[in-house]
Length: 109
Image 1 (tube, one colour):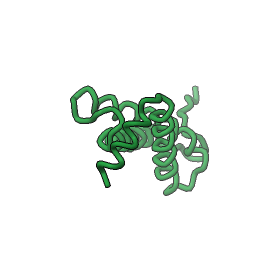
Image 2 (tube, rainbow, N blue to C red; image 1 turned 90 degrees about the vertical axis):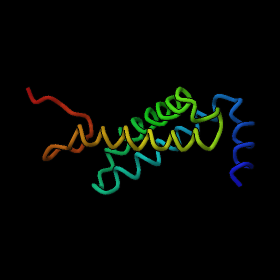
Image 3 (cartoon, rainbow, N blue to C red; image 1 turned 45 degrees about the vertical axis):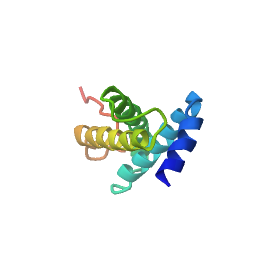
Image 4 (tube, rainbow, N blue to C red; image 1 turned 180 degrees about the vertical axis):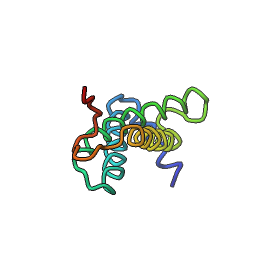
């Protein structure tokens, strides 16, 4: 099954938009999963954007270290790990303050 998936994704990865759409889907799923425990719908958009960036970074690091080929299942796994790591780090570094409904830190100066 994995070999068949690798062949299909590798063939479609020749088109850059397929990889980008895959990263968008991974980032959106990660954003949805991490915003769900706090039931804050306003966190979904920022965590999804951070998840997409993390997915791209995870895939690029996997390529850099020679652990994934373009369009393979290892690339998608690395993208998911990168998205989870970066979105989780973002959520921990930017905790919501009392009464805040947005995920972006605002200075109160």
